[in-house]
Length: 67
Image 1 (cartoon, rainbow, N blue to C red):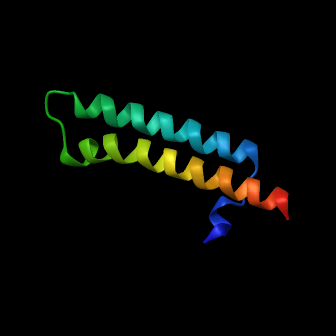
Image 2 (image 1 turned 60 degrees about the vertical axis):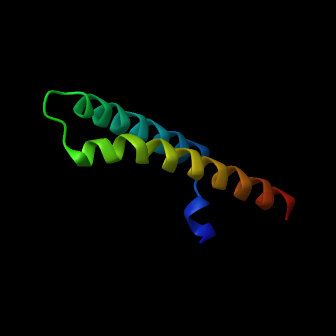
């Protein structure tokens, strides 16, 4: 499972940029006149995924430096 954290810093920043754009899209769609349940779900899911991935990525990088 640790292979998903084996990315460079540039790739990590790219994940965050795409995550922020996806979150902005979901937030814009979730406050529109006719929001979909899927956009509301993404509005909450994307920040949690980014935060948990960041925590795992940092822990993996710390443990990789220690070896």
